[in-house]
Image 1 (cartoon, rainbow, N blue to C red):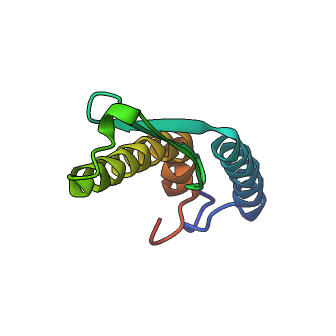
Image 2: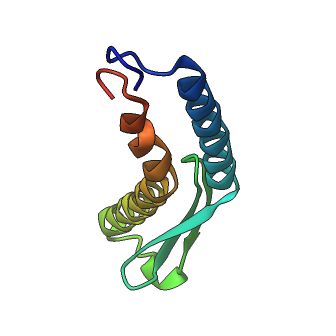
Length: 110
């Protein structure tokens, strides 16, 4: 900070541009990522993009029981939740360093 407690505007702009670039890179990495969630010991597998788009659902024929559709539904839901957890963790890993650095800008509320 400069004398009088005022932040250096040029320095703030450089930091903001750097963060914007890091954010764009992290978002691109997330968009390219594919994560997998499973349930039932691998009976159901869901592949999801880093942006949250479900790309595929694989169901082992052993999981298909016409007399117990509810279990299969639960397995699919559990696999989707598992894949979403993987996306959340990857997002925190990629975006945390970028968004966590906002406190260094000296801006109120960050």
